[in-house]
Amino acid sequence: MTTRRLSLACVIAGSLLALAGCAVAPAPASDAGVFFDDFSQPSVAALAAGGWTVRDQRGHPGIEGAGWGAGALSLVDDPAQRGNRLLRLTARTDGTPAGTTQAQLCHARKYLEGTYAARIRFSDAPVRGPDGDVLVQTFYTVSPLRFAYDPQYSEIDWEYLPNGGWGDARTRLYGVTWQTVRLDPWDAYNQPLQHVDALGAAGGGWHVLMMQVAGGKSRFFLDGRQLDEHGGRNHPVVPMAIAFSQWFVPAGQLAGVSAPRAYEEDVDWVYHARNRVMTPAEVEQAVQALRRSGQTAIDTVPAAEPPLTSTCDF
Image (cartoon, rainbow, N blue to C red; front, side):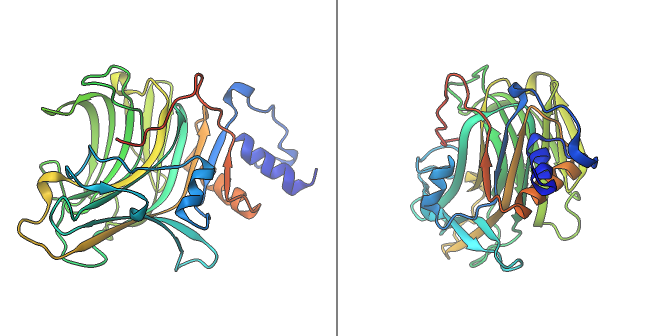
């Protein structure tokens, strides 16, 4: 085996050691598994071959009666890096439910403990039309909510609120771990983190979001810096789907404004190492090694036993 192939094998195994020959015991078979996608597919339809599901069902969250579907997703060339491709989620509205489209994409429901990361471009203003809608741009993991106060419900969120929300008008980054929730009337049991200045003066733009989920703790990292640690009853208990979404907060649309507007959220790549706690530097090395080797997508994370359906409706 060549040095390059050996190095790549170390990356996939999660070792990432700067030692010649990568002379360490491999992770146990029960711990093995990497998921990576850099969204180089030629079309949205091709995402299904990699295990992705495009949401097309109406319902929570967002505007009641709004549409969801493949038309809210696209795969585009990266203007900043030749040959690179991006997943783009576009939320559109004219201020009415019928004129509103929201975006969501979900992977298989088989992820629980380990390390999650994604490189995402948040937007602070619409690409066209007037600004001011309260919307949520996300990277998260989630299981279905089968009924109010479902004890098995599990969710870990990153949310960017460019125009505020949740009772606070400030632009901020919001992270949540969930125990359970009742949707109507709303009653949530969760632990939030909120950072107004975490993204710096630029606000949106490109950032690497990461979660370490292990040992009863969920740790949140932004661009290599740990922002918070959650635990206790909010720790996930069942396998979840990896998801991205962009949607409008029902009470936050511009009153009386009918001009069409559209907001974009871009995703460069997503990465998960099953049952392994990795540092931000190790994740970055793993992603770059996969890209240098020509890997645009890899999925060695075993399916849940028994297999679970990713409904992509929450």
